[in-house]
Image (cartoon, rainbow, N blue to C red; front, side, top):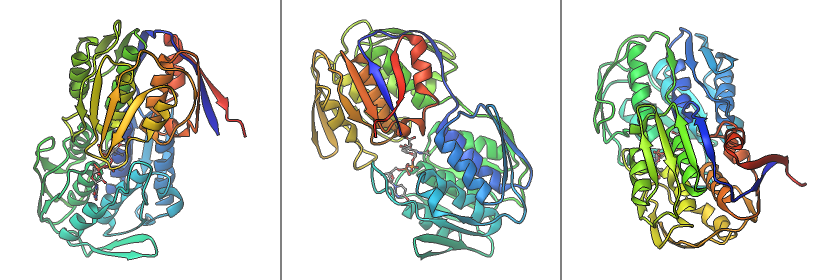
Amino acid sequence: MEAFLIKGGRPLKGKVGVSGAKNAVLPLMAAALLTHEPCTLEGVPHLRDVRTMTALLKALGAQVKREGERITIHTSPSSAWEAPYNLVKTMRASILVLGPMVGRLCKAKISLPGGCAIGVRPIDLHLKALEKLGANISLEEGYVVATCPRLKGNTVYFDKVTVTGTENILMASVLAQGDTILENCAKEPEVQELAQVLRAMGASIKGEGTDTIRIHGIEELKGYHHRVMPDRIETATLLIAGAITGGEIEIEGVIPQHVEAVTQKLREAGVDLQVERERIKVKGHNRPRAVDVTTLPYPGFPTDVQAQFMALMTLAQGTSVITEKIFENRFLHAAELQRMGAQIKVEGNKAIVKGVEGLKGAPVMATDLRASASLVLAALAAQGTTWISRIYHLDRGYERLDEKLAPLGAHIERVKEKP
Ligand code: EPZ
């Protein structure tokens, strides 16, 4: 396993680009299962989760070719229809093959994803929606088995806003017979991009980005050739890197609208931001002010930026209250930040963060993807050296973040973890 060795206390300065969005690439790769025509995605980052989705699609009979930042997927008509546990257990987003498989093959067998560090993360809403569309769902030895003569359009109401739930059922319904109405949908940009690509494939979809999406089922879909959107969570992470180190970073190739909830909070904290059409300049000259944050579905403050923002608040003037409303256990980074001198009290879904003058480097452990990003940010700001173990969590969702930060002046080294 690998670790990061970071010598902190150096303001980051310079320009940095943002990779393609992990949480857009994964559903778009799964969408290739809806057609027998080739599908090409441009701007695909080199991430562990992309490699896992590639392996999963191959296990389902697809040919997947990777050339640099381009991936081409070509499913075979006699696609296999079982998503094996060994792959699904490493990436929850594997569940995204369920909808397209049931929609196109009228059958699917996929291992239950199991929980993860940040919560139980059930898929009950995915299954309930598929049953509403006429699928027979059974649980057999840890696998979900879904079959149907052909899905039939219906009205589906999501009890909770679910990103991959909305994406799964959107993909299932585009080939269903008749009309489907999805209520209480997720509005994330990644959901909207999936709908736009499905429409380019020939699907009849209206209303993405609102609570209600209407789909008219058709017989078959064409392939797609699409460049994926920039990663808004990486954008937010890099903005906070500039702020927390008191540096000056220009982040290029971004969509500012996708990070509005974050830039607004950073401004409230006194961070100087200059927003242009496709770039944002961040200057973190002064110590940030403490501000409260509550995570909400898009366009609210993203739960995937909560850990990174907490790192910033550990150095703020005053006390901030961070409320996590999406996942039940997404404060694992708090204990690690405390090892670096942060003063954080976790009470249920709230973390009370009392800002301190400075953090000190220490050995810490990454527990999940965004927690590991939070530790990197804290280490960049801390005085002294920080050793972050289990950095494989970070590589799931950030494309060689160390190689992006080093040219900005970060002293960050990827090392082999001591046995
Ligand atoms: C997506 O996960 C993202 N992953 C997550 O990003 C992100 O944190 C999350 O949405 C929330 O924005 C991808 O897009 C691949 P949900 P997802 O279904 O779809 C509950 C990252 O860091 N729920 O929107 O799995 C669930 O437990 C990852 O890149 C049910 O109860 O999240 C959670 O409390 C982490 N039953 C809430 O809804 C269900 O059937 C929102 O989950 C489905 C969800």
